[in-house]
Length: 245
Length: 214
Image 1 (cartoon, rainbow over the protein chains, first blue to last red):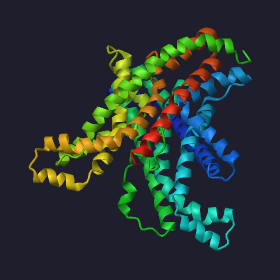
Image 2: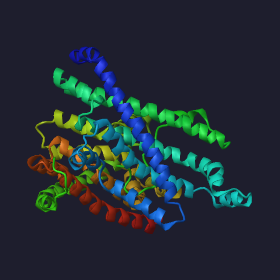
Image 3: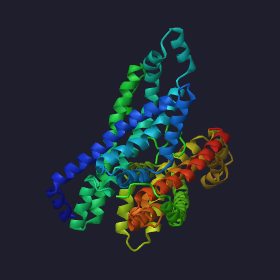
Image 4: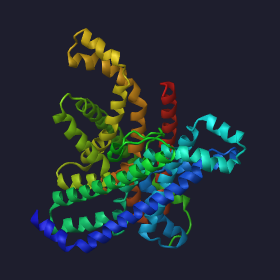
């Protein structure tokens, strides 16, 4: 036990850089996913059949094939097809972004659909252009509904980052795995790693709760201070087939 | 390296991947069984009258739910080397997903009208009879589609089992890939098999959800 923690202290620089890689993959992956969620989600609400169709196919493709396979495909198959070796972190960000973007698109679609019809009608009556209507009336209301589901997806994404270890990116899991094999303290090492992830997940949840509160405030909805500390619900708010995986 | 996509390889690797597919399916089916039973137990424990039970149950659940499945799998496999990897995989998958399914059961139990509980008390049924004869039969019906959805998402996470040397589909794909230096074909094929198996099941679940009035 003490062996492990003294080695832990010695390896602090590597652990810090591992933590940094994990966070980088999470944040960049989440940003790409957020962008794709809106693009694909709004496309699926379009009146054009082509745009709806493209969005449907992309979403079903990335949800239906496993994330693990997508990541490995990018890492192992892409180089032999194109001749370029991709950086492991880049592969990770791309795979996480595409996969969670597909799940997020359903969240966006569901949230926009759940804004009451009357809001659209009122915006039309006020002679707003479609883009203006979306930006000023529909999205601010839909956004509040999206946040809890996005929080769930964000934590799911964080929980996928140990996959980077398998494609030899120097992430947090890699750093602790090295410590484990050196000290032989399996139980302590993995428990430490799990606690690290738990702390990260809870910190991200708190940040998202803050975001949710500020979004609600902008709509003039009351929020109590206690809601900031609440944990996530396991059942996604917008029921999407297959859950996140 | 090998530039083009070779269909011959696809044909040649298919039997080996299909072989792994049965293990994938087996892990999913038994994994969701463990999750379904354990999830129900957690949901019932979460409704215990004393906080001595509910608080620790909630804490452990939150911890398992917020930490990566891959770390849990690798950790368990390294600690229990004498147990068969497939068994370790099924148990860990089951426990991980039980933290999700328990919430499904909780929602299902909450959806049973309060009057049903009161009627049970009025008839002075024991807690055991109340759960068995009145509450669960009504609650379980509501949770079947949601459990199905978790089964699909578990199915897509079974490739993690390859890491702990369970010979499932992706393990076989990597095996074939390293032997023949052909990764493109086998990973594409594995992805397509996942798609072909999970998409129709998703559609079926969506239909079932609609039929049960969600």
